[in-house]
Amino acid sequence: MDVKLWNDKRDREMYDDVAELFAIITATEKLEKAFVRDIISPADYETECQKLISHFKILSLILKDTVPNIKQFHDAYKMNCSAALNRLVTSGVPATIEHRATATSMELSSSLNKLSTLLPADVDQKIEMREWLSSLLLIVLVFFVSFFLGIVLKDMRKGY
Image (cartoon, rainbow, N blue to C red; front, top):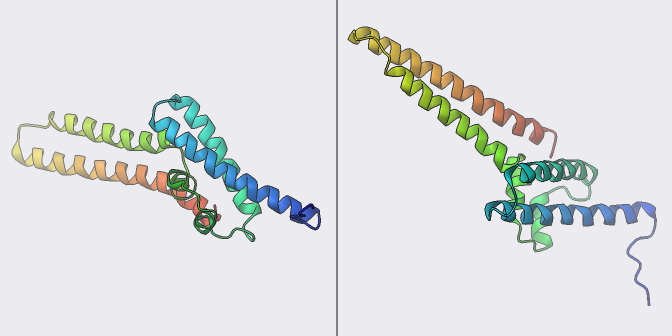
């Protein structure tokens, strides 16, 4: 006795796409765990993760009517893939890129703090220079955060 899952080509493609979504989420979870355990190099992780994220975004668009909520899909199929959900839905970028942005802002902060040791000896000028450096640091940090969040927010607005 054969069980027919689809009635026409459109149904078959839908089931194939849902299976592919399941596979992408599962593969991303395995990739995240491999990266955390240092089984895969950061360069290979970033390349593969970006592929999975882009495939996920494309498939999410294709399945937006069938699977309107990825979290509900995850729960309905009893997937245990919280790292994949974070990477694919919440963050939208590989961990290496996410942490690189944080490291860059920390390095910038450290450099500006070193620069503040070169302040003039006059107390009033020193205070004014520190305020200026603090403002500069704030502007640069806001720029980095806005840039990073802008990428994520832009993707979120598109419904990824």
